[in-house]
Image 1 (spheres, rainbow, N blue to C red):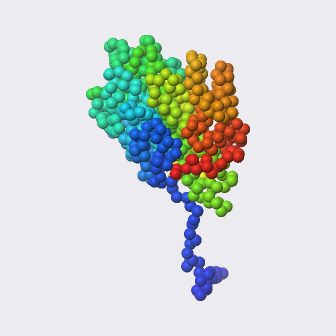
Image 2: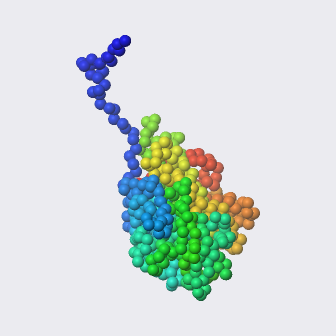
Length: 559
């Protein structure tokens, strides 16, 4: 059987000659969010710096210019894609316990530490130094969450390391605005990093249950040498130059500093058993380690280790509250950019009646989180003030609890606002989505934060008064804030089962009062009506009613 050839179009018929037709241009594509200054065009961050630390504006703007830099975005992508690898032995069999990172990780660390994100609060005598550093951390968490871990640990550890003379070489190296990845003794480095090795496999957050032990080499006491034996189940950044850890001594749970390298250059007796295979934060090496007569220095008095660590934890917890607000900002920036550029049904997505309530709701969530995080940082600027000290003690666990609980919902809804393109690994949204749940777990879970608030109220019920005093001016103007104030006052002595409700209500009331002070009234009123009233705020986003969606969305835009 003969098969006839396919018929060819008539050469004289241009309409039928498909080979000569030009492709239809593809339109309605969204360009990447690049080269927009994340500080200069962020209304909240600019306002905070102008009010509290105007001297830091240039530094914040310089870091802000790198947030949406394509090169930096590629570093963050590559560092997550090519994860750290553990090498226990070198090529001839010597124990090295080395972790190999992709070059992108070191690029990020160099930018973060070189920008002073970890240390600005401790290296300047300018007013508002903690607030200025908080803005830097807020910007950094829009770049990368994995390197935010060693950056945040350094911030929290510096005052501990400065607390006794024997540790000053470590304090000075960690404070330096430089990153030196070489695996050599601290006194030979231009800058150093530090890790926290606390949790054991059986005890979790209950550090008093730890079984790792430390015994003195000669004398007992702060700064003296001890040998540590035991294990740690969550040991983040095992390539740090030193580690703060807790162990049992004769007097009880104590804090110690363990260098990775001894002064003679030898590796300390720390074995890295394996790296964790984690849901997110993958570029940051988390590990399981064992101590076998690891050389250490006692930090503070024997038996006072929990107090030492909790002093440091106040800074790490506030940093997680700020970091969560930064992660919300990154997700919101991506969602608003996409929805302003993408059209459907004849209009930008951001103008559609079904989409505008969602974007406005996300903007309100970010605004409340950012102001709450920066308020906690502001309290750290006045550590010698009794009132501000109580504000910091009360609001730090509140902000850590609430901001960290809300950020997974924000990143999820931001992905919904973008659609399928948000699910593609070439874009940053999957990275945000995986990162978001971690902040609520690290440095104390949600229940731990709620319990911490309860401990403060049990020891000193008057500690709540300075926070309530901040809400009262707004309560005098807004009935819903007044009602929340009354309810919080009643809940402060209620059973423990209502503790989460109390902390939630407190967070929302403080956020509302801060927005009344520092945000446009359209934003503050919508937040209070939705979060403390009955105007449609539900478990999800996009259920707002009777608000100016356009004005609220504009407050969240980078511009």
